[in-house]
Image (cartoon, rainbow, N blue to C red; front, side, top):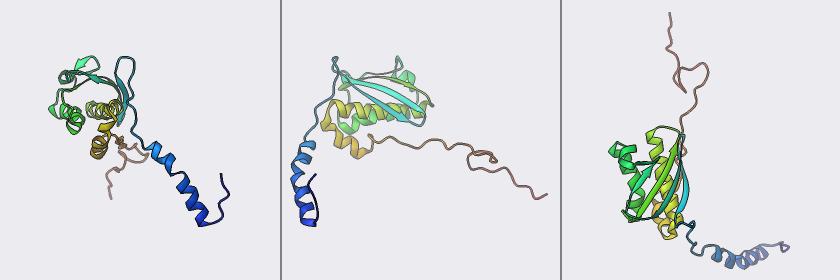
Length: 162
């Protein structure tokens, strides 16, 4: 690198590297496999979901079952539909997901995270809408571990004066 001894040298060095930054900001190419699918991994709590997205009729298959059969609660089905509603592509993509670990709520969040990441890889123009909604960020909240001398993570045993 050039020998930078003053502020003017630094400014000229930064200005010289600006075209490289502009090239990096160029629109990204879609990432698809030989079958025309995009793949992403989604995580939430202890659940991990592998998600494949491809153009289709809007069918969602989770662990070999239909979405309505696997996630029976309407709230969980709504969570899975959110990325498509935000991106305005409802009914345009088929989803195949395998999910393991955690409970149903965590699994629904993991599949939603995976769908969002896979949609963004399939069609990079959808990224701003999904990013603004916060769907591309992994929700890092997990259950706090139990501490010794406590009944739960923070709950103490009942104090008895006598």
